[in-house]
Amino acid sequence: MLRKLLDETLDPGYEEAAERRRAAGDGSNKSSKPNQAGGWLRGVLVAVCLLLIGGLGTVVVAQVRSSAPQRAELRQALIVDIAEQRAAGDLLQQRLAEVREQATRAREQLLTATTQGQRALDELVRAESAAGLTAVRGPGLAVTLTDAPPPKDDGENLGRILDRDIQAVVNELWAAGAEAVAIDGQRLGPTTSIRSAGQAILVDFRPVTNPYLIEAIGPADMFDDFLQSGTGRTLASYVAAFGLGLDVRANDQLDLLPGTGAGLSQAEPVGLRAGSGRGDAP
Amino acid sequence: MKGIRTGPVIPILGLAAGIAAGILLDPSVPTSLQPYLPIAVVAALDAVFGGIRARLDGIFDAKVFVVSFISNVVVAGLIVFLGDQLGVGAQLSTAVIVVLGIRIFGNAAAIRRHLFRA
Image 1 (cartoon, one colour):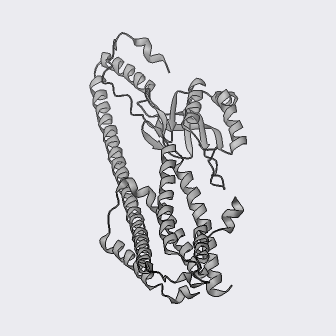
Image 2: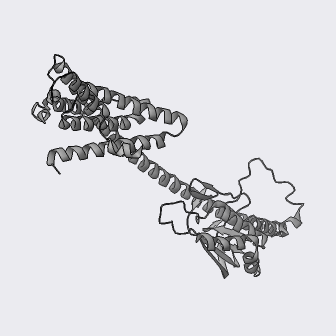
Image 3: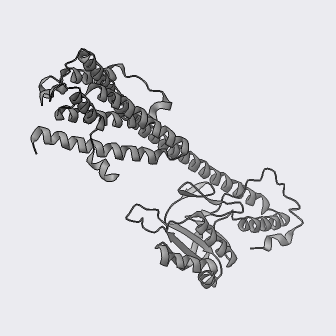
């Protein structure tokens, strides 16, 4: 069948038509010239067909040409939109940090005046640092995850870091006793999500990019605990199998920024005064 | 070989008029038809190259040309439509393009042999 396809590129209909004419005794080779009564009409038909073909081709080319820049324009507009919205978000975040700092300072001034206020302030500070709302500093671990270099044959990159790799690392760090964790400088709070949207990984709905730096402040044995954990070993096997990058370093002094905290709208705090033991939890 | 001298003027005029009409009128194509247009063009090109080759071979026949043009376009469109309904539209489009492409190449080679004797 393939051979037939490759050899017989000319429509067999032409051959047959020529055969028929020869059989009709029309003579040897005049057939290419429309010599019958309908010849003129046939020429016009051919011309009409070619007219259609020309029109069709032009329309398609015009269509493709006009749709390509449109798509590029749309894409550019979306990129600009994203940049603008991100800048606006950053600005709001900054403003929030400023206002929060003002509030903290004002609160401190008011509360330090009385002993009762001082006690309340201590409790508040403990609660806030437990919730990840204050900047912290301490010894800990820096885990860097890097995407494997893209394969040469345009195939799927199996060594890409996924959201669940980062989730696993973070969970393992918490389990190993981490007290504060940040991804690419973004502090994890009580309601922080780590998830992927398309190709991007979002931490609290803000994109983080390769290489992914996960910093955790915690006890000294976190290093060994993490490397010997199931997650640590799985990741090490991924490094061997898929070529992704895993770098774990103990660090004497890590500085983590404050998180944004959870905005409570439905949940109402209960018994702030009563639960004095609550603030002890790391 | 007489075909060359008996003037491909009318067909060429037709082609030129078609291109001119396409540019000047700039007709808008319904969205539902748009996926089939590129395939239709390739099918039409196949008919054109077949026609030119037949002409050079001295066995051109207007009826065969017109019928092959129309049926090519319709069948190519139908195959792609069917493929879309079955969820293999992209693959079937590729198949149609490959087959027509082979035929176009074969006919173009034959035309080249006629014209340059090489």
